[in-house]
Length: 181
Image (cartoon, rainbow, N blue to C red; front, side, top):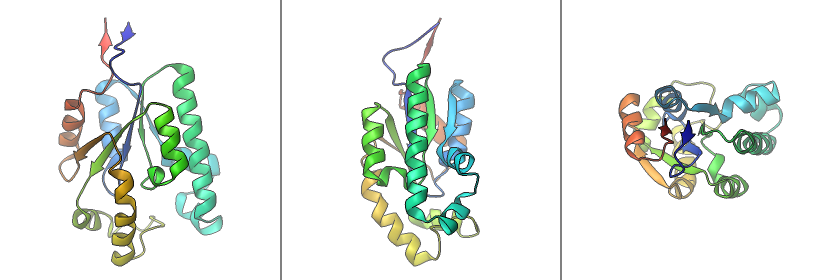
C-alpha cells in the first residue's frame, strides 16, 4: 500500500476559537483513517497544566513558546514517520510568524475554518476556560487582529454548519491522501 504522492502529508486546520477545529478534525481523521493531533492537547500534556493555568501562571509568552515547541515536535514526528497527519491548531498559532514559517517550510496545507464572528460569539459565550475570551469587545478585537493570518491559508471552508457537513467540504477539497492498493 502506498500513499498517493499528489496529496500532501500534513493538513492543518486553523481558525478562531469556536470554529470547530478539534471537533471537525476528530471526525475527519476517523473518516479518512489519518492520525489526528490536537496542538492544544499536546501543549497541555507537555506543560502539565491546562491552557488557562498556563496563561494565568506563566503568561501568554510562555504559552506561545510551549506551543511552538510542540508544533516543531508534531511536524518532526510527521516527517520522521512519513505518515499523513491532520493537525488542529490553536486559534492563535498561525498569528505567530515563526509558526507560520515552520508550517510553510514543512509543506503543510492550511485550511481556515471560517465562521462569522456573531456565530463564534454565540458558540463561546458560555465557555469559561478560554483565557483570551474576556468580553465581546476584546473578542471582536482579537478576531480582527487574527483575520489577516487566517486569510493566508491555502483553503477556506465555511464552518457555521453541522460538523459532518464541514467534513464533507474538507473532503471535497481533494487534499487528503488517497490509499492506493
